Length: 188
Image 1 (tube, rainbow, N blue to C red):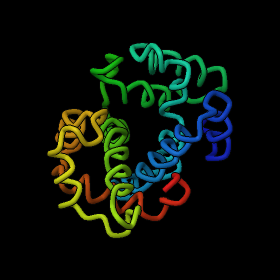
Image 2 (cartoon, one colour; image 1 turned 60 degrees about the horizontal axis):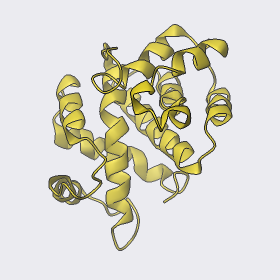
Image 3 (tube, one colour; image 1 turned 120 degrees about the horizontal axis):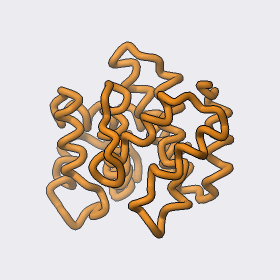
Image 4 (tube, rainbow, N blue to C red; image 1 turned 180 degrees about the horizontal axis):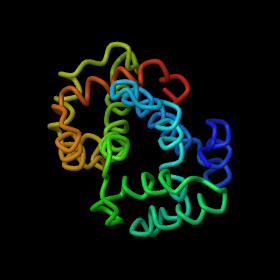
Protein backbone atom coordinates (compact mmCIF):
# COMPACT_ATOMS: atom_id res chain seq x y z
CA UNK A 1 0.00 0.00 0.00
CA UNK A 2 1.05 3.55 -0.72
CA UNK A 3 -0.30 5.54 2.22
CA UNK A 4 -1.98 8.87 1.78
CA UNK A 5 -0.21 11.93 3.17
CA UNK A 6 -2.50 11.83 6.22
CA UNK A 7 -1.81 8.13 6.82
CA UNK A 8 1.93 8.70 6.46
CA UNK A 9 1.86 11.56 8.98
CA UNK A 10 -0.15 9.48 11.42
CA UNK A 11 2.30 6.59 11.07
CA UNK A 12 5.28 8.90 11.53
CA UNK A 13 3.73 10.43 14.65
CA UNK A 14 3.14 6.97 16.14
CA UNK A 15 6.92 6.53 16.23
CA UNK A 16 8.19 10.12 16.53
CA UNK A 17 7.03 12.58 19.16
CA UNK A 18 9.67 15.33 18.93
CA UNK A 19 8.38 18.39 17.09
CA UNK A 20 11.79 18.93 15.45
CA UNK A 21 11.58 15.48 13.84
CA UNK A 22 8.11 16.19 12.50
CA UNK A 23 9.33 19.54 11.12
CA UNK A 24 12.24 17.77 9.43
CA UNK A 25 9.87 15.24 7.85
CA UNK A 26 7.68 18.07 6.54
CA UNK A 27 10.72 19.86 5.11
CA UNK A 28 11.88 16.72 3.34
CA UNK A 29 8.32 16.07 2.14
CA UNK A 30 8.05 19.53 0.56
CA UNK A 31 11.44 19.20 -1.09
CA UNK A 32 10.66 15.73 -2.42
CA UNK A 33 7.35 16.95 -3.85
CA UNK A 34 9.17 19.82 -5.56
CA UNK A 35 11.78 17.56 -7.14
CA UNK A 36 9.12 15.04 -8.20
CA UNK A 37 7.53 17.78 -10.27
CA UNK A 38 10.90 18.63 -11.83
CA UNK A 39 11.33 14.96 -12.78
CA UNK A 40 7.69 14.66 -13.94
CA UNK A 41 7.10 12.01 -11.28
CA UNK A 42 4.32 11.47 -8.73
CA UNK A 43 4.62 14.21 -6.06
CA UNK A 44 2.23 12.38 -3.72
CA UNK A 45 4.41 9.26 -3.67
CA UNK A 46 7.61 11.27 -3.30
CA UNK A 47 6.04 13.33 -0.51
CA UNK A 48 5.00 10.22 1.41
CA UNK A 49 8.56 8.90 1.18
CA UNK A 50 9.80 12.24 2.51
CA UNK A 51 7.44 12.02 5.46
CA UNK A 52 8.37 8.43 6.32
CA UNK A 53 12.12 8.46 5.64
CA UNK A 54 13.15 8.87 9.31
CA UNK A 55 10.34 6.84 10.89
CA UNK A 56 12.80 4.95 13.12
CA UNK A 57 14.89 8.01 14.07
CA UNK A 58 13.72 8.42 17.66
CA UNK A 59 14.28 4.72 18.34
CA UNK A 60 17.84 4.86 16.97
CA UNK A 61 19.22 8.21 18.15
CA UNK A 62 21.49 6.55 20.70
CA UNK A 63 22.54 3.88 18.17
CA UNK A 64 22.72 5.74 14.83
CA UNK A 65 24.20 2.73 13.08
CA UNK A 66 20.75 1.09 13.49
CA UNK A 67 18.97 3.96 11.72
CA UNK A 68 17.05 2.66 8.68
CA UNK A 69 17.19 -0.88 10.10
CA UNK A 70 14.08 -0.68 12.29
CA UNK A 71 12.09 1.17 9.63
CA UNK A 72 11.32 -1.85 7.41
CA UNK A 73 9.42 -3.70 10.14
CA UNK A 74 7.60 -0.54 11.23
CA UNK A 75 6.51 0.09 7.65
CA UNK A 76 5.73 -3.54 6.80
CA UNK A 77 3.53 -3.89 9.87
CA UNK A 78 1.53 -0.93 8.55
CA UNK A 79 1.26 -2.57 5.12
CA UNK A 80 3.48 -0.04 3.35
CA UNK A 81 4.69 -0.93 -0.14
CA UNK A 82 8.17 -2.46 -0.46
CA UNK A 83 9.28 0.26 -2.91
CA UNK A 84 8.77 2.86 -0.17
CA UNK A 85 10.66 0.68 2.31
CA UNK A 86 13.57 0.39 -0.13
CA UNK A 87 13.60 4.16 -0.61
CA UNK A 88 13.60 4.76 3.16
CA UNK A 89 16.52 2.37 3.60
CA UNK A 90 18.45 3.87 0.68
CA UNK A 91 18.72 7.31 2.23
CA UNK A 92 21.18 5.80 4.71
CA UNK A 93 23.43 4.36 2.00
CA UNK A 94 27.07 4.41 2.98
CA UNK A 95 26.19 5.79 6.41
CA UNK A 96 24.16 3.09 8.10
CA UNK A 97 22.95 0.82 5.26
CA UNK A 98 24.30 -0.79 2.11
CA UNK A 99 21.02 -0.17 0.23
CA UNK A 100 22.12 1.96 -2.70
CA UNK A 101 19.76 4.61 -4.13
CA UNK A 102 18.69 3.22 -7.49
CA UNK A 103 16.21 5.67 -9.01
CA UNK A 104 15.46 9.41 -9.14
CA UNK A 105 13.29 9.31 -6.01
CA UNK A 106 15.95 7.53 -3.95
CA UNK A 107 18.86 9.61 -5.24
CA UNK A 108 16.94 12.79 -4.47
CA UNK A 109 16.05 11.67 -0.94
CA UNK A 110 19.68 10.71 -0.29
CA UNK A 111 20.81 14.19 -1.36
CA UNK A 112 18.24 16.52 0.13
CA UNK A 113 17.87 14.88 3.55
CA UNK A 114 21.07 16.58 4.71
CA UNK A 115 20.66 19.65 2.52
CA UNK A 116 17.31 20.70 3.98
CA UNK A 117 18.93 21.01 7.40
CA UNK A 118 21.74 23.20 6.08
CA UNK A 119 19.35 25.50 4.23
CA UNK A 120 16.93 25.84 7.14
CA UNK A 121 19.79 26.65 9.49
CA UNK A 122 21.14 29.20 7.00
CA UNK A 123 17.71 30.83 6.93
CA UNK A 124 17.41 30.91 10.71
CA UNK A 125 20.66 32.85 11.17
CA UNK A 126 19.60 35.59 8.74
CA UNK A 127 18.27 38.84 10.23
CA UNK A 128 14.88 38.00 8.69
CA UNK A 129 14.98 34.44 10.13
CA UNK A 130 13.39 33.44 6.84
CA UNK A 131 14.06 31.68 3.57
CA UNK A 132 12.26 34.40 1.61
CA UNK A 133 15.48 36.37 1.13
CA UNK A 134 17.95 33.46 1.27
CA UNK A 135 20.07 33.18 -1.85
CA UNK A 136 22.47 30.60 -3.21
CA UNK A 137 25.54 32.73 -2.45
CA UNK A 138 24.57 32.88 1.24
CA UNK A 139 24.20 29.11 1.42
CA UNK A 140 27.52 28.61 -0.39
CA UNK A 141 29.25 30.95 2.08
CA UNK A 142 27.82 28.94 5.00
CA UNK A 143 28.73 25.71 3.18
CA UNK A 144 32.42 26.66 3.31
CA UNK A 145 32.28 27.34 7.04
CA UNK A 146 32.79 23.86 8.50
CA UNK A 147 31.76 25.10 11.97
CA UNK A 148 28.35 26.12 10.60
CA UNK A 149 25.78 23.30 10.79
CA UNK A 150 28.63 21.00 11.75
CA UNK A 151 26.39 17.92 11.72
CA UNK A 152 25.53 18.30 8.03
CA UNK A 153 27.61 15.98 5.89
CA UNK A 154 28.49 18.10 2.88
CA UNK A 155 30.19 15.17 1.13
CA UNK A 156 26.89 13.27 1.06
CA UNK A 157 25.17 16.27 -0.51
CA UNK A 158 27.90 16.64 -3.15
CA UNK A 159 27.89 12.92 -3.89
CA UNK A 160 24.09 12.95 -4.09
CA UNK A 161 24.02 15.89 -6.51
CA UNK A 162 26.46 14.02 -8.75
CA UNK A 163 24.26 10.91 -8.61
CA UNK A 164 21.27 13.11 -9.52
CA UNK A 165 23.26 14.42 -12.52
CA UNK A 166 22.46 17.93 -11.36
CA UNK A 167 24.93 20.70 -10.53
CA UNK A 168 25.16 21.26 -6.79
CA UNK A 169 24.16 24.91 -7.19
CA UNK A 170 20.95 23.84 -8.94
CA UNK A 171 20.14 21.31 -6.20
CA UNK A 172 20.64 24.01 -3.56
CA UNK A 173 18.53 26.56 -5.47
CA UNK A 174 15.69 24.09 -6.04
CA UNK A 175 15.74 23.08 -2.37
CA UNK A 176 15.49 26.72 -1.30
CA UNK A 177 12.53 27.16 -3.65
CA UNK A 178 10.89 24.01 -2.26
CA UNK A 179 11.21 25.11 1.35
CA UNK A 180 10.06 28.72 1.05
CA UNK A 181 6.32 27.98 0.89
CA UNK A 182 6.44 25.70 3.96
CA UNK A 183 8.78 27.62 6.24
CA UNK A 184 6.06 28.34 8.83
CA UNK A 185 4.94 24.70 8.98
CA UNK A 186 8.54 23.54 9.53
CA UNK A 187 9.07 25.75 12.55
CA UNK A 188 10.72 28.82 11.07
